[in-house]
Image: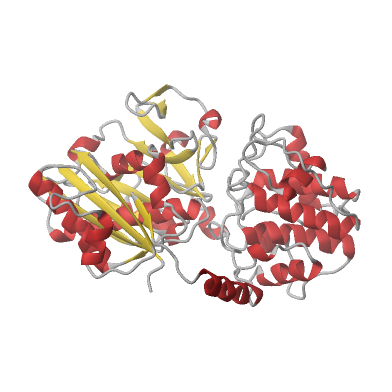
Length: 504
């Protein structure tokens, strides 16, 4: 459920917007700033992306950069195409890029303009852009070392090899390219600028010595960390997250040797402990320990890999499927009774993974008697899951708002007390009326409610991603603040998530 407020004084606000847009500054990480600045000066950084360096780059935005790059390098105007071959996109830049053979659709008549681009797709589209310009990059002799691109087609591998040899793209410290990883605006601009620099003989003063620092400044682990393997673990017991391993059966000491101390420990589970690693939501995961041994691993980070399945893939890319869950149709991979459940969202994209020991039973985890502190632990974990998903979609994380927490908790408690599940409470108040009653000011707001019957937080996550309305609300780019409220009757949990944007 969502509401947007009417906006008055349209003319005045439009005037203010035009002034602020003209004075917009580049927003990007420090390593990417000189490349963004260089691309702006060269003419292939659209004004609309100046302040979105850290966000995911859509297929439409990448096409726009490609066309501007083409015009800059070739000295020709892009073709003016008036008839779209796509039912879901009329963008002039996309149509021009399609005419130049830079982009194609994802299906007949479908372009999916808002879908975030992956590193594999970036390599293909930059290579096609260079072909359209009629230019070739000079090889600097280095052969790509990537261990995770063997399943890609020969043509894609050639694209990656060519760009790697020219030091336009690179991998991570673990010798992986991560082809399915989603791309940010600043990463895309950096790759284009490095290609431009190689062609035109120009470059930013702060150009790093290696392409690795340029395209991916933050490695998933230091080389020292990456060399620490999961002790005595079989491959089917290990999940790698940005190249760093976590394994079933390992002790808390072994876990901490690679990942350090957990961000916090959740004690809402019965007789078990959960170590939660937030990692700025980039590599979020938690493990459940029974008698100091890891018996469950869960992550909704797009940067995981498991036996050839990658977190940014789709249902079609899941390897060695042994079956599917009865309720959600999620793929199962089973080895020696160790079960991996690959979570798919409503559109068939991989959204997470849960790896469990054969004796692990999620149904007994949640404590029936929950103190306020334990409910806060659960709320904190759910907010971390939301922010991980938002980051994966290229959106900014939400900030917790105490008033929103209180508002959400009050509604969850009311649903428990009066035995209902609805957005309108027993007094007839809508979410927006309830939020204002708590003294909240906003221009847009939304709410998501869930009843979890004897279920764990993982099942709450599964409910969210299977519902386009719920996950759409939770990842809405206009939302900036959030509050998660939980109330329970025994092991039945009522969860309310209130979100707002545009607070004054």
